[in-house]
Length: 261
Image (tube, rainbow, N blue to C red):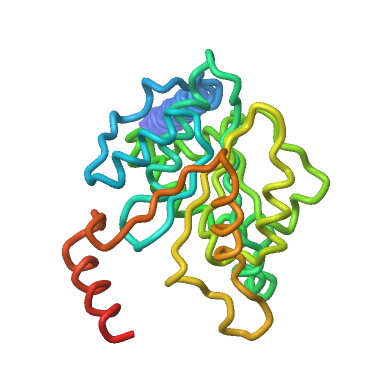
């Protein structure tokens, strides 16, 4: 009798293990299928939320971009400059009828040079500076993995100014973000990479520059603004505290800090 019970117990245990194994395999297969669909997804502008401008200057940014101009959007923090830059760029990049096939986001190497002292691989270090764009893509698509999925599909590329020498960016929309943290040499290096059928959206805020603090690097954004003022290709939109959409506390803080500067 004891042997029969023991045999039944072993049989039940084996069946339980088999069921758990099959369930694990099923879960793995479902995960793999979902991952495959996500990576192979053909993105389109319909995957983006329909974003409307909230202030007159945001409206101007939309108008100037859709007129086909190269664009410089600069001014107060919290006004949606980077958010709108990525949104406008992706509308075109994801439209198969247009020549632009990739959104290239470029940030300064000067502001991130200390990443060499941080733990982790270069990819892990650089990934920290992609966090704002992951958040923006999540908000634009309601998909937490949208940024990385678009990177995997080739629709988005992120790089710092350390690795752009010798490149040519054809059929792309280049978003130069945090331009206040770039030296003139960096800005010049980026602008001379822009190739055929490509467009530029420059964003920055001179008040937020991290340069000039260490005495080594000088902000090149002021020279950039003077340079594009002599070019017919660029439209410039200057944002003020009245355009802040991040929140009333941010708006109040920036207004107060400007008075105490």
